[in-house]
Image (spheres, helix red, strand yellow):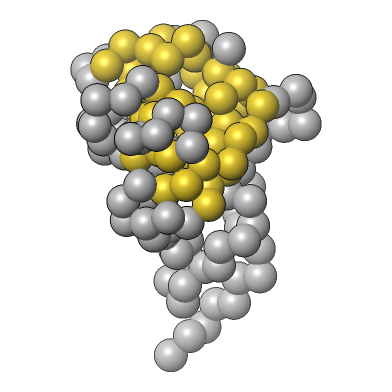
Length: 150
């Protein structure tokens, strides 16, 4: 039985813009299924048009939740499917999904490493993109943390 009704995404959800500072958000076609929000995507087979979670492409940005997706009964965002249009932030501040390997919250200014599943950590994976973690005290909880893409 459902006892909780959610009508909006909680603050600090993966893929939501962190604040109203300047940002660059581009539309790209998903190449592959199950691309979530707040994760790193790489340029796909057609750079500048498609993005994918894996492959040999260069870093394209972080997927943005543009409120066009809904929550399921458990409060989980419905994931994107192949060829869906995605918003991808390449510059700005965004709530990003942390890797399961992150045991302690990243410190402000810590370097960002991209993991193979699109999540982020302070070490391991691939160093870069040109980004840093920017959490205030208590903000890097529940598997999300704000990142500034520069």
